Length: 81
Image (cartoon, rainbow, N blue to C red):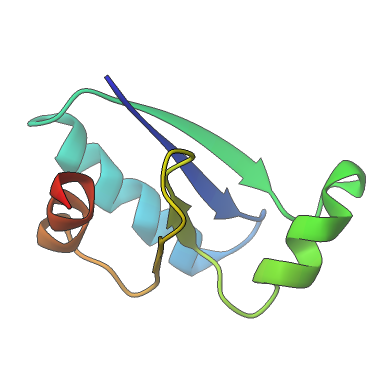
């Protein structure tokens, strides 16, 4: 199973759209997705890095990230790459 991190925050309509797109990917590819709320007090570093970029997908095993906007096809290509 592949692991992803979705950097997000509450009340973010783009983050909600990203979650819907991920739901479509789940149907074809088993994923473990950890959501990180960049606005949470313990995530000060993530807030500084992702404030203007969310939602962002990251694979802990890779240095590259997938910035919004992304589609189902983009996520599948990112996972395959």
